[in-house]
Image 1 (cartoon, rainbow, N blue to C red):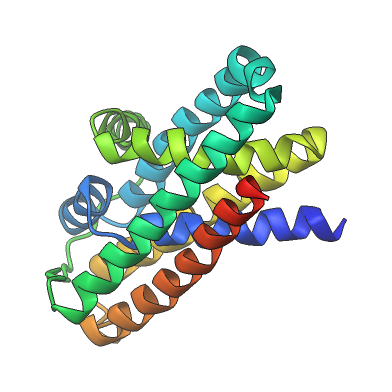
Image 2: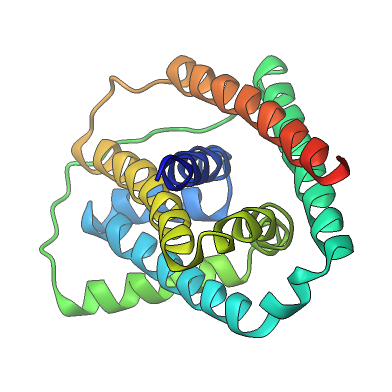
Length: 216
């Protein structure tokens, strides 16, 4: 059970590291929450998570047998670990060089929740992930490496990985959606930078661990 918890926590923290990096998803959440309100951020994440669930199912059904090869396991472990190290270094560099540029604008406009908003922004969440090259790279490298570890514990391991992963997406993007739609100003660039530094250090640790485990 402790290993299941480790998978859950590790999956959540790594997912946070990916979600925190400014990209198409964050931009869509900020602009949508500012224009249409908080619930848009929720449905954008729902769309994103639906796509990732489909990806995991396809991954397990179609590629799982190939991952039993020890050489493939080593390659994925090394590739995933190397990409984690790259993510950590790039994140830390962006913070130290002050390249993070996010403007948390607020809005007081209110919009009611309806089926049209739910459907439209769920679809946008799917599309924004499909058109993001970084999303594919993440799943081919880091996601695959985590799934290999999760598969060892069968369904409970995979479920723990997926729930941990989507929890990070929901927590972060709903938090941003709330800040933008409510006009809160207690979240600033300094706090954001501290969070990024913590995540980058964790990525260094996890990346090194993946590579060492694959080589030994």
